[in-house]
Every structure is written in C-alpha cells, then in structure tokens.
Image 1 (cartoon, protein in one colour):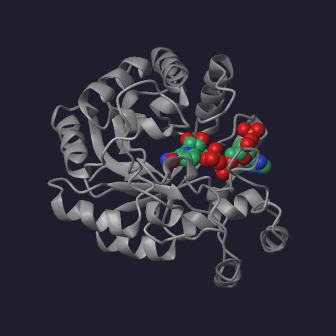
Image 2 (cartoon, protein in one colour):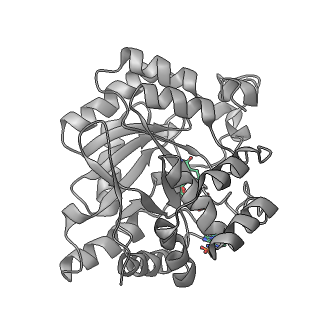
Length: 317
Ligand SMILES: NC(=O)c1ccc[n+]([C@@H]2O[C@H](COP(=O)([O-])OP(=O)(O)OC[C@H]3O[C@@H](n4cnc5c(N)ncnc54)[C@H](OP(=O)(O)O)[C@@H]3O)[C@@H](O)[C@H]2O)c1
C-alpha cells in the first residue's frame, strides 16, 4: 500500500505535500531524472522541487506530462516548485515563462527567489565570478514575483536561503508575503531562530538537504553517520535517513529530499510512518551544529553585497 501524502496549509490557503522530491543532481542526466520522477510518482511522491539552474526542469516536466497523459495523475494532484536564479532578478516574469516552457506546464505551484543575490543577466552559472554581481534590490525583485502571481504563472511565491533579518525586511514591504522560505535544515542545522521568526510571520519553512546532502560537493555523511541518529533509528527499527526526515516533519517543516534510487525513495517516504518521541527530539536538540551550504560563491570583497559569509546569512551561521 502506498503512503498517503500528508500536506501542510500555506499562508495563501493552498496545500503543499510535506515530502518533496529534490531533482538537483550534478550529473543532470535527463533520462535518469525522468525515470526517477516516474518512479517517485509510483512511490507516492506528489511534490517535486526544481530550479532553472539545476537543468532538471525539462526532464521533470516530461515525466509529469507523460504521467498526466497516461492518466496516472492529474495536474491538480501534484505540487511543482521552481526557482528564480540571480541572473533573472531583473525580470521574474520572463524567467518564469521560460521555466514554464522548460517544464511544459501552464503554472508552477510555488516560485521561489533562489538566493538573495542579484547577478547581471547572462549565462546560468552555479559559480558566478566577481564581475557577474549586480546591486541587490529585493523590493523590485519581489514586485516582479508578485506580478508572476497576478498573471497566474504560479500559485504562490516564496524565497530561499533568506535569514531572519531578510524575512523581516521582505514582509515589511511585500504586498504578498512569502508563503515559504526554503533553507538548509537537518538534525545538525536546526534553524531555531529562523523558524521562530518565520512562524511569527506565517512563513512555512521547507527543509532542503534534510539528510545533510551526502555525496554532494557541499554536503557530508555526518548526519546519516551521527551516533545519536543511529541510536534513535535502532530504537524505532528505522534508518538514520528516516529519523532525519521524521525530525524535520516533527518540527513542522516540509522536507525536500533527493533520491533517484527506488529503494531509498521508498525508505525516505516511509519517514511519514515514523513518530519520534520527546526524548528523541531532546537528543537531536543537543547535537553539535554544522551548516554545510555556506554560500561562499556569493561572497566577495569587491562586487557582492556580502563581504563575508556572516554578511550573507546576517550572522546566522
Ligand atoms: N534552495 C536551495 O538553495 C537548495 C539547495 C540545495 C538543495 N535544494 C533542493 O533540495 C533537494 C534535496 O537536497 P540535497 O540533494 O542537497 O540533499 P539530501 O536530500 O539531503 O541528500 C541527497 C543525497 O542523499 C542520498 N540519499 C537519499 N536518500 C538516502 C537514504 N535513505 N540513505 C542514504 N543516502 C540517501 C542521495 O543519493 P541517491 O540519489 O543515490 O539516493 C543523494 O546523494 C535538492 O535536490 C534540491 O531540489 C535546494
């Protein structure tokens, strides 16, 4: 029997499935991504996370459109997130139209400002160089995001990698508040302060790299190998990955987890069946913290608004 997907209500009144499938993979192999999405649909995933910079929009869109055409799902049953890259801050409407073309869909459910970083229009590049930076103007960027919403290109708008301070600044000038802040969050980076601020402003926290991104250039096996997670897993006859995900869910966030392997996909969605008790939560609270995605690529002393990593995260690091 497939796990029924739990959902969370966002501040725009819409619903979002609490477990999402991440589609970033450094290989970015179209066929593999497409097969993985079809597999995920079979395993009960209904929420898919992509971004223009990942290059996974065409494969994700193909798989979803095929599944819709085959009657496996209806568009209304799935939740698709994509993100605005820095080079597109000057024109979110055109960027989202391009994303929709890549996906072959009429709208995305959620469109996020990927980073609080504005880059000069140009080639998509995960590693911008000094001359690529432009002056950050979040108010104008957010106005463009609101325009996307008004035009029906997305169902809700949000941000990603925003600190408490930036969330507070944004809600101050926004006509439409962000529905979501997608940030790194796992048992070794718990985001306590950010979660308090977001809760106060009714902004849902969605956790990326919820397993600590093992195998990626910024991540580590530290979360899955942590002795405390292993001991909690043993107690519940679960796996450390399930404990990490169940922890995020118990803390009220959604989790965006990437696996293109059917066994691990099944394992990950199985976290919905795992309930941690108070003593487990307390143990996790005492784990040493480690932020893995530090965003050094967006820091430089000359052209970036962020001279240090501390500036980028407003000292929440
Ligand atoms: N907004 C942002 O700036 C941002 C940043 C980073 C990520 N994201 C999004 O969040 C998604 C997930 O984050 P992530 O990919 O960084 O990290 P993650 O989901 O924490 O970890 C993914 C890695 O863990 C492996 N894995 C998955 N399930 C496992 C399990 N049960 N046991 C052991 N290993 C397992 C995967 O390999 P296999 O595929 O081989 O299973 C993959 O190498 C991304 O794909 C992306 O969509 C957003």
